Image 1 (tube, one colour):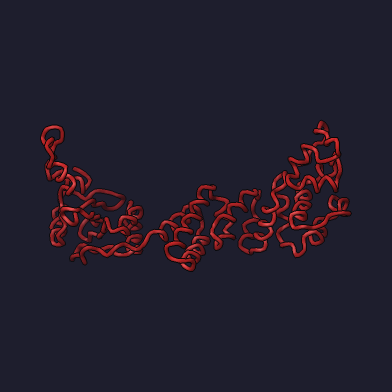
Image 2 (tube, rainbow, N blue to C red):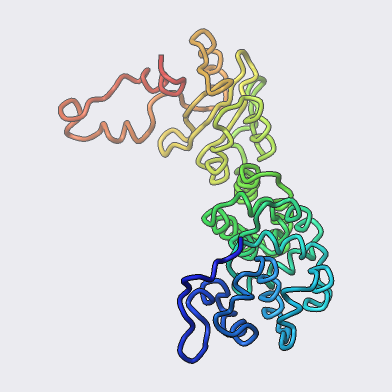
Amino acid sequence: MFIRTSGLVPATASGGPSSLLKLVAGEFAAAVDRLWPAPHTPFLTAPAARRHLACVALAIGRDLAGRAEALLAERLRRLIPALVPEAPAGLERALGRLGEVAWPADDYRRLLRLLEAPRATKVLRHAEAIPPELVRRLDRLPPAMAEAVGLAFELHEDGVAAVREAYDALRSREGLAVAERAAERWARTGSARALFEAVRDDLCPEPAAPPHSGTRRLRPLATKRDLRDAARRYRNCLADRMPYAATGWSAFYEWEGPPGAVVELARDPLFGWRLEEVRTLGNGLVAEPYRDALVDELALMGVHVGRAGWELDRALRPDVGHGWRLRPADAARSDAFGGD
């Protein structure tokens, strides 16, 4: 886009930058004013790529005195090496995708570093537009993700902040080396969805030891790998329950009798371990004819099937039977299986 100069706000009385120049050139307005004095027409009507090149050169400390004419006339391919020593190969292409107004100097310097990274350059080469927010997001991500341009395009600023906070938490808990290896894996994920799944998985510790080694048909899901595999096979909400296993408040088993299901046991202050929930494929329910066999197997492990300890505690109050009713014990078993 070429910027029309008719009707522009006039330059200041001292001949300094006009309001339009301040808008277009940003923090470089004063330097641009010295190269193209008011009304700054040659600069303002130049293609955006040339204006950005001038600002990139100024951002890295180049003296442009005496180069004003060349900046607007010479071929970019010859001009870039003269103004940006050792310029990355993708700079010429990128200059035409940076928008119409100048970026802050720090963002230009971040862009030059990005264009030196092969993986980042490959993504940027195919981008229709390169907003300054992109390089800022990359700057806020963990260092090992500094080239993850594809993810930065997808992520909202809140997502970037959450990933960085997760990285810092992992570094605090397990050390820099572990956090860096995790961030390297995150950078290789192919989408924001896959990234968030990987981050959540790395943040979650391995499950606490299962309370029982299992039975012939109840197999403990004792590791994150076990839980991930079962969640994939049963296509249910098990993956979201991993934090409960990590804290030791829940333990998970796979029922290998028909119809096959994931069984969640919950710590209980009265009963020790209690059946919390049973879900089969797609969070489906286990049909009544199969429930007794599972309950019998749980009994071999000493697992309580029925009301929770807190519910019995609540019943032992003066208002029981008046303001608060004690439901039948069988109702709690029914709840664990998803109701009738």
